[in-house]
Image (cartoon, rainbow, N blue to C red; front, top):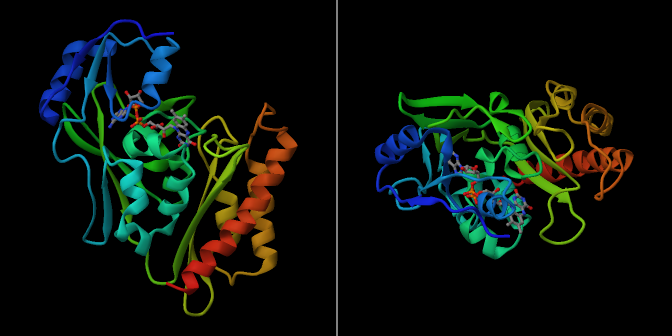
Length: 290
Ligand code: FAD
Protein backbone atom coordinates (compact mmCIF):
# COMPACT_ATOMS: atom_id res chain seq x y z
CA UNK A 1 0.00 0.00 0.00
CA UNK A 2 1.00 3.62 -0.29
CA UNK A 3 0.47 6.25 2.41
CA UNK A 4 -2.45 8.62 2.42
CA UNK A 5 -1.41 12.00 1.00
CA UNK A 6 0.14 14.47 3.43
CA UNK A 7 1.74 17.90 3.52
CA UNK A 8 5.50 17.79 4.06
CA UNK A 9 7.21 20.47 6.18
CA UNK A 10 10.92 20.85 6.86
CA UNK A 11 11.51 23.44 9.60
CA UNK A 12 15.04 24.82 10.03
CA UNK A 13 14.87 25.39 13.79
CA UNK A 14 13.41 23.79 16.90
CA UNK A 15 11.22 26.86 17.56
CA UNK A 16 9.78 26.63 14.03
CA UNK A 17 9.07 22.90 14.42
CA UNK A 18 7.33 23.42 17.77
CA UNK A 19 5.26 26.25 16.31
CA UNK A 20 4.21 24.02 13.37
CA UNK A 21 3.25 21.22 15.76
CA UNK A 22 1.06 23.68 17.65
CA UNK A 23 -0.45 25.07 14.44
CA UNK A 24 -1.31 21.67 12.91
CA UNK A 25 -2.35 20.01 16.19
CA UNK A 26 -3.12 16.30 16.30
CA UNK A 27 -3.01 16.00 12.49
CA UNK A 28 0.79 16.43 12.54
CA UNK A 29 3.54 13.89 13.17
CA UNK A 30 7.27 14.31 13.62
CA UNK A 31 9.49 12.53 11.08
CA UNK A 32 12.99 11.47 12.22
CA UNK A 33 14.52 8.35 10.63
CA UNK A 34 11.12 7.30 9.28
CA UNK A 35 11.81 3.60 9.85
CA UNK A 36 8.83 3.06 12.11
CA UNK A 37 6.56 5.89 10.96
CA UNK A 38 6.77 5.34 7.18
CA UNK A 39 5.97 1.58 7.40
CA UNK A 40 2.97 2.45 9.60
CA UNK A 41 1.86 5.09 7.09
CA UNK A 42 2.18 2.60 4.23
CA UNK A 43 -0.10 0.23 6.14
CA UNK A 44 -2.35 3.21 6.97
CA UNK A 45 -2.05 2.50 10.70
CA UNK A 46 -0.83 6.12 10.83
CA UNK A 47 -2.48 8.74 8.62
CA UNK A 48 -0.97 12.13 9.52
CA UNK A 49 -2.02 15.09 7.39
CA UNK A 50 1.24 16.91 8.09
CA UNK A 51 4.75 15.48 8.41
CA UNK A 52 7.17 17.72 10.31
CA UNK A 53 10.62 16.52 9.23
CA UNK A 54 13.12 17.49 11.94
CA UNK A 55 16.19 16.24 10.02
CA UNK A 56 17.20 19.74 8.88
CA UNK A 57 17.22 21.23 12.37
CA UNK A 58 20.86 21.75 13.37
CA UNK A 59 22.19 20.67 16.75
CA UNK A 60 19.97 17.67 17.47
CA UNK A 61 22.57 14.98 16.76
CA UNK A 62 25.50 14.53 19.17
CA UNK A 63 27.09 12.25 21.78
CA UNK A 64 29.04 14.05 24.51
CA UNK A 65 29.88 14.02 28.19
CA UNK A 66 29.15 17.09 30.33
CA UNK A 67 29.65 17.30 34.10
CA UNK A 68 29.36 13.57 34.69
CA UNK A 69 26.36 13.16 32.37
CA UNK A 70 26.30 11.48 28.96
CA UNK A 71 24.13 13.52 26.60
CA UNK A 72 22.77 12.09 23.36
CA UNK A 73 20.82 14.25 20.91
CA UNK A 74 17.39 12.92 19.96
CA UNK A 75 18.27 12.83 16.26
CA UNK A 76 21.44 10.76 16.75
CA UNK A 77 21.43 7.76 14.36
CA UNK A 78 21.94 4.15 15.41
CA UNK A 79 25.09 4.00 13.25
CA UNK A 80 26.62 6.89 15.21
CA UNK A 81 25.86 5.16 18.51
CA UNK A 82 27.39 1.94 17.17
CA UNK A 83 30.71 3.57 16.25
CA UNK A 84 31.13 6.17 19.03
CA UNK A 85 34.48 5.87 20.87
CA UNK A 86 33.03 7.58 23.95
CA UNK A 87 30.27 4.97 24.15
CA UNK A 88 32.65 2.08 23.46
CA UNK A 89 34.78 3.22 26.39
CA UNK A 90 32.06 3.78 28.99
CA UNK A 91 28.91 2.08 27.71
CA UNK A 92 29.68 -1.10 25.73
CA UNK A 93 25.95 -1.86 25.93
CA UNK A 94 25.38 0.60 23.04
CA UNK A 95 27.56 -1.45 20.67
CA UNK A 96 25.65 -4.57 21.81
CA UNK A 97 22.22 -3.09 21.19
CA UNK A 98 22.80 -1.19 17.96
CA UNK A 99 24.33 -4.23 16.22
CA UNK A 100 21.10 -6.11 16.99
CA UNK A 101 18.75 -3.47 15.57
CA UNK A 102 17.60 -4.44 12.09
CA UNK A 103 20.30 -4.00 9.42
CA UNK A 104 22.82 -1.29 8.42
CA UNK A 105 20.30 0.49 6.16
CA UNK A 106 17.85 0.92 9.04
CA UNK A 107 20.67 1.89 11.42
CA UNK A 108 21.94 4.57 9.04
CA UNK A 109 18.59 6.36 9.30
CA UNK A 110 16.87 5.27 12.54
CA UNK A 111 17.37 7.59 15.51
CA UNK A 112 17.47 6.96 19.24
CA UNK A 113 14.81 9.64 19.76
CA UNK A 114 12.45 7.97 17.29
CA UNK A 115 13.14 4.55 18.78
CA UNK A 116 12.02 5.75 22.23
CA UNK A 117 9.23 8.10 21.10
CA UNK A 118 7.62 5.28 19.10
CA UNK A 119 6.80 3.63 22.47
CA UNK A 120 7.08 0.07 21.13
CA UNK A 121 7.94 -2.54 23.79
CA UNK A 122 9.57 -4.58 20.99
CA UNK A 123 12.14 -1.85 20.31
CA UNK A 124 15.52 -2.43 21.93
CA UNK A 125 16.54 0.98 23.31
CA UNK A 126 13.83 1.25 26.00
CA UNK A 127 15.25 -1.66 28.05
CA UNK A 128 18.77 -0.27 27.67
CA UNK A 129 17.61 3.15 28.87
CA UNK A 130 16.05 1.50 31.92
CA UNK A 131 19.25 -0.36 32.75
CA UNK A 132 21.20 2.92 32.45
CA UNK A 133 18.65 4.95 34.49
CA UNK A 134 18.27 7.49 31.68
CA UNK A 135 16.26 10.69 31.64
CA UNK A 136 14.47 11.87 28.52
CA UNK A 137 14.34 15.58 27.66
CA UNK A 138 11.18 16.79 25.91
CA UNK A 139 11.11 20.27 24.40
CA UNK A 140 7.74 21.86 23.80
CA UNK A 141 6.02 25.26 23.76
CA UNK A 142 6.76 25.74 27.47
CA UNK A 143 10.47 24.88 27.07
CA UNK A 144 12.40 21.82 28.26
CA UNK A 145 11.32 19.24 30.79
CA UNK A 146 13.05 16.10 32.06
CA UNK A 147 11.16 12.81 32.20
CA UNK A 148 12.74 9.91 34.15
CA UNK A 149 12.69 6.79 31.98
CA UNK A 150 10.48 4.99 34.53
CA UNK A 151 7.77 7.59 33.87
CA UNK A 152 8.20 7.67 30.09
CA UNK A 153 6.41 4.51 28.86
CA UNK A 154 2.90 4.13 30.16
CA UNK A 155 0.81 2.24 27.62
CA UNK A 156 0.79 0.34 24.35
CA UNK A 157 2.68 2.69 21.98
CA UNK A 158 2.08 5.46 24.51
CA UNK A 159 4.69 7.69 26.09
CA UNK A 160 4.76 10.72 28.36
CA UNK A 161 5.45 12.96 25.34
CA UNK A 162 2.61 15.44 24.93
CA UNK A 163 1.40 16.69 21.61
CA UNK A 164 3.81 19.44 20.55
CA UNK A 165 6.78 17.86 22.36
CA UNK A 166 9.99 16.95 20.58
CA UNK A 167 12.32 14.44 22.22
CA UNK A 168 15.54 16.44 22.04
CA UNK A 169 18.00 14.71 24.38
CA UNK A 170 18.71 11.65 26.48
CA UNK A 171 20.74 12.08 29.68
CA UNK A 172 22.54 9.19 31.35
CA UNK A 173 24.71 9.34 34.48
CA UNK A 174 28.35 8.48 33.66
CA UNK A 175 29.11 5.15 35.35
CA UNK A 176 31.52 5.02 38.32
CA UNK A 177 34.58 2.73 38.19
CA UNK A 178 33.66 -0.92 38.60
CA UNK A 179 30.67 -0.64 36.26
CA UNK A 180 29.89 -2.90 33.32
CA UNK A 181 26.92 -3.17 30.97
CA UNK A 182 25.59 -5.63 28.39
CA UNK A 183 22.56 -6.29 26.17
CA UNK A 184 21.42 -9.29 24.20
CA UNK A 185 18.18 -10.42 22.63
CA UNK A 186 17.03 -13.74 21.28
CA UNK A 187 15.79 -13.26 17.71
CA UNK A 188 14.36 -15.71 15.18
CA UNK A 189 16.68 -14.45 12.46
CA UNK A 190 19.13 -11.62 12.02
CA UNK A 191 17.35 -8.26 12.03
CA UNK A 192 14.19 -9.50 13.71
CA UNK A 193 12.55 -7.89 16.70
CA UNK A 194 13.29 -9.59 20.03
CA UNK A 195 11.65 -12.80 21.14
CA UNK A 196 12.96 -11.50 24.47
CA UNK A 197 15.84 -9.17 25.34
CA UNK A 198 17.71 -8.22 28.51
CA UNK A 199 19.80 -5.12 29.32
CA UNK A 200 22.01 -5.02 32.42
CA UNK A 201 24.25 -2.41 34.01
CA UNK A 202 25.96 -3.34 37.27
CA UNK A 203 28.43 -1.59 39.58
CA UNK A 204 30.63 -3.54 41.99
CA UNK A 205 32.59 -1.84 44.79
CA UNK A 206 36.19 -2.65 45.80
CA UNK A 207 34.84 -4.95 48.51
CA UNK A 208 32.93 -6.99 45.92
CA UNK A 209 29.52 -5.72 46.99
CA UNK A 210 27.05 -4.70 44.27
CA UNK A 211 26.34 -0.98 44.76
CA UNK A 212 24.02 -0.40 41.79
CA UNK A 213 22.13 -2.49 39.25
CA UNK A 214 19.79 -1.71 36.38
CA UNK A 215 17.92 -4.42 34.46
CA UNK A 216 15.52 -3.73 31.58
CA UNK A 217 13.49 -6.26 29.55
CA UNK A 218 12.49 -6.10 25.87
CA UNK A 219 9.25 -7.40 24.34
CA UNK A 220 8.01 -9.47 27.27
CA UNK A 221 5.45 -7.00 28.61
CA UNK A 222 2.92 -4.60 27.04
CA UNK A 223 5.33 -1.75 27.95
CA UNK A 224 9.11 -1.85 28.36
CA UNK A 225 9.76 -3.31 31.81
CA UNK A 226 12.24 -2.68 34.61
CA UNK A 227 13.04 -5.90 36.49
CA UNK A 228 12.94 -4.10 39.83
CA UNK A 229 12.84 -7.19 42.07
CA UNK A 230 15.83 -8.62 40.21
CA UNK A 231 17.81 -5.43 40.78
CA UNK A 232 17.02 -5.54 44.50
CA UNK A 233 18.14 -9.17 44.65
CA UNK A 234 21.63 -8.02 43.64
CA UNK A 235 22.13 -4.65 45.37
CA UNK A 236 23.88 -4.44 48.74
CA UNK A 237 25.48 -7.88 48.78
CA UNK A 238 28.38 -9.71 47.17
CA UNK A 239 27.52 -11.16 43.77
CA UNK A 240 27.05 -14.93 44.01
CA UNK A 241 25.56 -17.59 41.76
CA UNK A 242 22.65 -17.72 44.25
CA UNK A 243 21.89 -13.98 43.93
CA UNK A 244 22.24 -14.15 40.12
CA UNK A 245 19.84 -17.12 40.00
CA UNK A 246 17.41 -15.24 42.22
CA UNK A 247 17.55 -12.17 39.93
CA UNK A 248 16.93 -14.40 36.89
CA UNK A 249 13.98 -16.13 38.55
CA UNK A 250 12.34 -12.85 39.59
CA UNK A 251 12.66 -11.37 36.07
CA UNK A 252 11.08 -14.48 34.53
CA UNK A 253 8.23 -14.29 37.07
CA UNK A 254 7.61 -10.54 36.82
CA UNK A 255 7.43 -10.18 33.03
CA UNK A 256 4.18 -10.72 31.12
CA UNK A 257 5.00 -12.18 27.70
CA UNK A 258 2.27 -13.30 25.35
CA UNK A 259 2.41 -16.48 23.28
CA UNK A 260 2.79 -15.65 19.59
CA UNK A 261 4.76 -16.61 16.47
CA UNK A 262 8.01 -15.89 18.33
CA UNK A 263 7.26 -18.50 20.99
CA UNK A 264 5.10 -19.52 23.91
CA UNK A 265 4.83 -17.55 27.12
CA UNK A 266 6.73 -20.29 28.95
CA UNK A 267 9.56 -20.28 26.39
CA UNK A 268 9.92 -16.50 26.62
CA UNK A 269 10.06 -16.60 30.44
CA UNK A 270 12.85 -19.18 30.24
CA UNK A 271 14.77 -17.02 27.74
CA UNK A 272 14.45 -14.05 30.11
CA UNK A 273 15.92 -16.11 32.97
CA UNK A 274 18.80 -17.36 30.81
CA UNK A 275 19.59 -13.92 29.39
CA UNK A 276 19.49 -12.23 32.82
CA UNK A 277 22.17 -14.67 34.02
CA UNK A 278 24.28 -14.27 30.88
CA UNK A 279 24.05 -10.47 30.80
CA UNK A 280 24.96 -10.15 34.48
CA UNK A 281 28.07 -12.30 33.86
CA UNK A 282 28.93 -10.30 30.74
CA UNK A 283 28.48 -6.96 32.53
CA UNK A 284 30.60 -8.15 35.47
CA UNK A 285 33.40 -9.30 33.13
CA UNK A 286 33.39 -5.84 31.56
CA UNK A 287 33.31 -4.17 35.00
CA UNK A 288 36.38 -6.18 36.01
CA UNK A 289 38.22 -5.03 32.89
CA UNK A 290 37.15 -1.40 33.08
P1 FAD B 1 10.39 7.61 12.98
O1 FAD B 1 9.97 6.41 12.24
O2 FAD B 1 10.68 8.84 12.19
O3 FAD B 1 9.28 7.99 14.07
C1 FAD B 1 8.72 7.00 14.92
C2 FAD B 1 7.66 7.67 15.84
O4 FAD B 1 8.28 8.51 16.79
C3 FAD B 1 6.68 8.57 15.09
O5 FAD B 1 5.44 8.52 15.76
C4 FAD B 1 7.29 9.95 15.19
O6 FAD B 1 6.32 10.98 15.08
C5 FAD B 1 7.89 9.89 16.59
N1 FAD B 1 9.14 10.67 16.72
C6 FAD B 1 10.29 10.46 16.01
N2 FAD B 1 11.26 11.27 16.46
C7 FAD B 1 10.72 11.99 17.47
C8 FAD B 1 11.23 12.99 18.34
N3 FAD B 1 12.52 13.39 18.29
N4 FAD B 1 10.39 13.53 19.26
C9 FAD B 1 9.10 13.12 19.35
N5 FAD B 1 8.55 12.18 18.56
C10 FAD B 1 9.36 11.61 17.63
N6 FAD B 1 13.95 -1.22 16.19
C11 FAD B 1 14.48 -1.89 17.21
O7 FAD B 1 14.62 -1.33 18.31
N7 FAD B 1 14.91 -3.19 17.08
C12 FAD B 1 14.82 -3.86 15.89
O8 FAD B 1 15.23 -5.01 15.81
C13 FAD B 1 14.25 -3.17 14.79
N8 FAD B 1 14.12 -3.78 13.59
C14 FAD B 1 13.61 -3.09 12.52
C15 FAD B 1 13.53 -3.72 11.28
C16 FAD B 1 13.04 -3.02 10.19
C17 FAD B 1 12.98 -3.73 8.86
C18 FAD B 1 12.62 -1.67 10.34
C19 FAD B 1 12.10 -0.89 9.16
C20 FAD B 1 12.69 -1.03 11.56
C21 FAD B 1 13.19 -1.74 12.67
N9 FAD B 1 13.27 -1.14 13.93
C22 FAD B 1 13.82 -1.83 14.99
C23 FAD B 1 12.74 0.21 14.15
C24 FAD B 1 13.82 1.24 13.94
O9 FAD B 1 14.77 1.17 14.99
C25 FAD B 1 13.21 2.65 13.88
O10 FAD B 1 14.15 3.45 13.28
C26 FAD B 1 12.81 3.27 15.20
O11 FAD B 1 11.83 2.51 15.87
C27 FAD B 1 12.18 4.65 15.01
O12 FAD B 1 13.16 5.62 14.84
P2 FAD B 1 13.04 6.62 13.63
O13 FAD B 1 14.08 7.66 13.85
O14 FAD B 1 13.07 5.87 12.37
O15 FAD B 1 11.60 7.30 13.94
